[in-house]
Length: 186
Image (cartoon, rainbow, N blue to C red; front, side):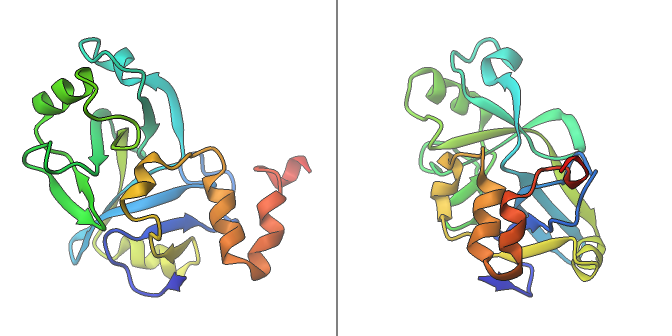
């Protein structure tokens, strides 16, 4: 369901018209925070070539790392659905949490207590200053939808997620679901 109001926990789906923007073309963003001062989100459908073990060798896991956005790409962030296991987590919404005690998180991963269905790691994040996201909304850069997956979105496959979201919107968006990423190559 398309929404007009920005609320943390929603999904921002890149309009098909965003072409040539390496960060946001065909992106789906989980809005992690939104208030009068600005917004923060994580691109949830752009896996990188790295695993958590590549970046932090003491974590014995092949969990994928995702491109969270163009801001602070030298920092690692994570969302999860196990606040009872990871202290100091901040609730986004729908049982999805942001961050928490990283030492506990490393131990939980190494002991097999959390897996790809419970946690997702990002390099960087997507950020908007005060009213910037609203301006982009007015320019028709984003479609706002509810996160119907709730906390199961963490384990959701990312390969075709933008296409799936566009197909769910139906109507005029259906034609874009099978278009090449760069229509000029068509």
